[in-house]
Amino acid sequence: MSDLTKLTLKAALAGLKARDFSSVDITKAHIEAIEQARGLNAYVLETPDHALAMAAESDARLARGEGGALEGAPLGIKDLFCTEGVRSTAASKILGNFVPAYESTVTSQLWRDGAVMLGKLNLDEFAMGSSNETSAFGPVINPWRRSGSDAALTPGGSSGGSAAATAADLCLAATATDTGGSIRQPASFTGTVGIKPTYGRCSRWGIIAFASSLDQAGPIAKTVEDAAIMLRSMSGHDVKDSTSLPVEVPDFASYVGKSVKGLRIGVPKEYRVPGMPAEIEKLWADGIAWLKDAGCEIVEVSLPHTKYALPAYYIVAPAEASSNLARYDGMRYGLRAGGPSLTDVYEESRAQGFGEEVKRRILIGTYVLSAGYYDAYYLKAQKVRRRIADDFDQAWQTCDALLTPTAPSAAFALGEQSDDPIAMYLNDIFTVTTNLAGLPGLSLPAGRDAQGLPLGLQLIGRALDEGTLFSLAGALEKAAGFTAKADRWW
Image 1 (cartoon, rainbow, N blue to C red):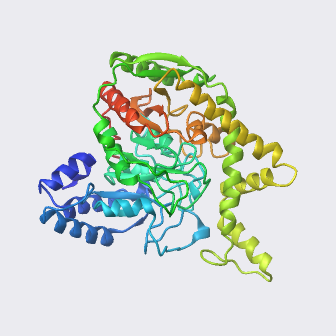
Image 2 (image 1 turned 135 degrees about the horizontal axis):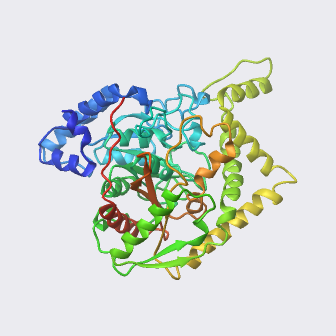
Image 3 (image 1 turned 120 degrees about the vertical axis):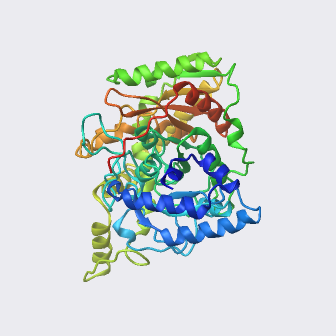
């Protein structure tokens, strides 16, 4: 039965529909795989009984010839999505054993389409991190290892649990969120596919907020087509989210396999950063050659304000985090520390409840929003953000999409960068621009480094043009022929 966990989402859905196996069968297989892989620390909460009950309901619907687009498929849910009656923590002590009385819009749409929830996945605390080392539940371990080494590697962050679980076949696919690269960088580090859709494509309602103008939900999956299937169910207008876009949801999977002949692909010269590993340079060159062979025209473009993207992001994101996280005061839910006065309760609850990285970002955010500094920092960062968006608008005059590396390196060892916040922040150098501009970005595995670790390529597209990204990603996936999986050691 364990072979069922190796199926792609598309193959599993076809097998379920054909009644080759039941949803209970494939769900049990995943539950067993999760139990055997607890050393990866991908799940912070397993929900086997809940999963089997949902699977039995799916089997009943399939027996009647009914069922939604994801009927019977076992998925993992990042623990940033509120799930009704199931503990949701954002991997933080401050939320304690918070059990929401409501369901996030994205997960409610997955259940509407018949998906099964295996459990809640680990992440960096409040999605703040690039290595999954800030989680109150401890770091996730990447299923991949360097050749000849048993050093524990990061799966990336913040959606490290989602990426590791998908790569290790502990779910058919997973939900994730991306504020500055938190879907795409983990996908690159684990040999999986991840897409951050256009800002507003997926509802943010019921997702625990980090930086509201940047956060966006998306899937991490095993293949480009699987990511397209997931994104269709996750997307859609939601009146409960004022930033949700009232637009039609296309059949994203229908774009995979479409010809890309004649598309113009931009290569931004500013992404050729000093000190980029030769392996990343080569992968980028390979990607360009593959798209040329598929009939694309390659054009060099300039995004002159790229060098300001990271500093602007690390002003805007902490500022919004400072505001969003002010609600965690020990009063209404979550951790409450004792103290002789109300102020002491507030201070102690926040001091004990938040981890070091979250505190760092709250302090930065509070500082840049404070009187006398707001204009110098936050307002200036928002003006830079506008310029970055203008750069992309200019690029679309000459190209249909952009091709870049996803991350400046392969997965690094746990603890390797945790003492240097700046080095950690530089992991987002190729991904933050799309969040600042609200554009879709997709990462797919396209090669391996000298130590056998996966490397990703990133495609960036026009707003609401995820379809073109899926067509291009399908062409790259076919040309790259990346089928490697992590050797099972856990």
